[in-house]
Image (cartoon, rainbow, N blue to C red; front, top):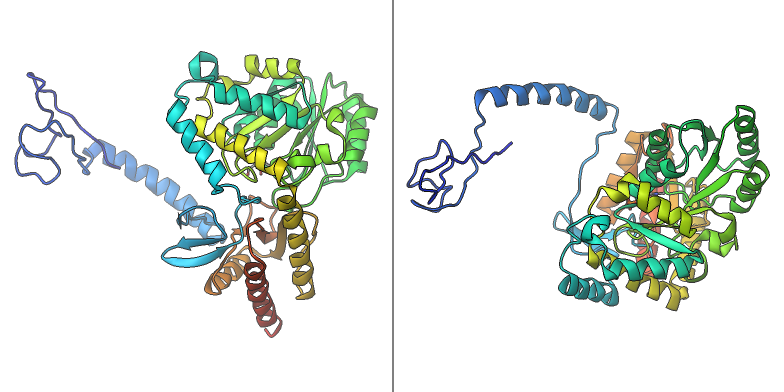
Length: 443
Ligand SMILES: Cc1ncc(COP(=O)(O)O)c(C=O)c1O
């Protein structure tokens, strides 16, 4: 680890990094310079501590690697377009959440640039101090109107939204009933809330109903049911109508995370609850701006009282810097496009459905075809990584998804489409997978 060690100079005229020569050192800009250089050799005590840390963590990393679960960052050059450059190679990108292809849309990018010029690069402060800017206000009003709720509140990420919201409405002595495949942020938000958490089998409303009855029997004061609407790693759709019925019967509140439905489902991309005309049956609407809307951040929408409660109590809203103005403006422009061009989402879903059918015919296990996310379940983590690696050789980039993101034994390729993929690009992905499918069948 590098560190900068300044030596104090009585005259304050120059600061020389500790342990470096005053002149002729390649890391300084010369005698008398106030530029600090990195001294890459830590003192002995720091080096010893670092070595102990590295040894402990290194052993754990080895365990992760030997289970075939080590993850690494891959660097993409340029925007999240259907064709990206990775490690100097042009690849067709089939795992981005840029579902509507808006992240590099000129109107979205221009809105971000304009906001950066007008409001600066950052909100710099938390919203409650002085980081609440006109762009935030305007976007919150737009989202509330779009979702058909009284109010909305921006969070800096979806993870923070889920961390913050759950514990604001539910706590000690209460119960949360959560789908087993809910996102990590819902799981962590539930844990932080101190409520008792019961987990129902994925999309199983019979199980949900029986857990809800159990909550009442156990004397839970308040009950919150939480589900995603389109599941992030499976792409399947929650039976929201039935879930909302269960909530009504049990007097439970309903929170729906629309991270992967926002922009794609519902009128103007307002989400699955809107599509099913269930907006009023959902007490807490959550969605993200960093997927189909091509920006960054998240919202919670609901009653004015809910939003005022979050402003006053949600720690992940209160104690963090407000969303960058450019992100708010980009999301706002993206919503306008989603509303004005519903054919983007329609075409995306139709093409995903057709591709899923084709892959099923080729022998792949594609459990559902209802959304823009097509999981190709392989099972074994190592085999999934191998398949992803072979697809790279065909010029197709699809990330391998392994535990703990998905349950053990269900490793998969999570193929996701963008509205901006051409038919030809989709055909290339299908042909690459078909080729690998044939190779696997031949042994
Ligand atoms: C269902 C779900 N909720 C919440 C989040 C977190 O959103 P963000 O990426 O904005 O933190 C994600 C992101 O992957 C998600 O898939």
